[in-house]
Image 1: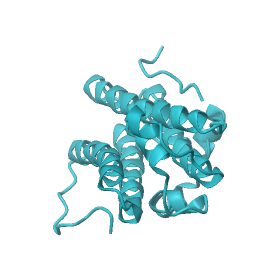
Image 2: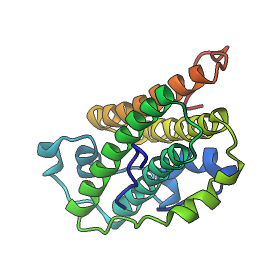
Image 3: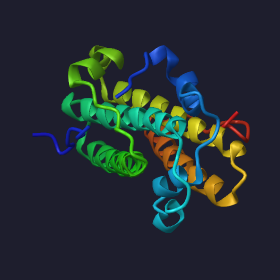
Length: 204
């Protein structure tokens, strides 16, 4: 049995739309901002989350984010079950998947605290089809897919920061983006990709 566990609980986008979709993940739900309660719960700040109730739009927005976290969790699951990952790389994948599970759990808690229903996960067969798992023939293929998803997630979280009036909320979104950027950096290094030649690579 794989060390990676199947996610407990998605919205999947075609691979060709991943970058754009993740960058605009908060706008897909028809919202450009999240309430203080939504981001506070997501960032683990329970005292702050005890303030205003979120709107239905906030819940929808968080569900879009939750769908993307489910996607990342299952992408790592597919990679692990492919048998293409060597032991050291598999260990890193397990750790990164655990980070996404923590993001997922925070999102689920936020959505439930607002009276919403967390988006349901699709079947593994659906994930395999949407992520074109059949095209994964090597460890490099798996890492390339994971790196693309991580970079898209980083850009999505960075994209929402300017909409916050609160510096605290912007910081939480930045912390989430930092996780995704860290993942991308490690994956790019494993793929022996050159570092970006220009600054300000993310969030553009």
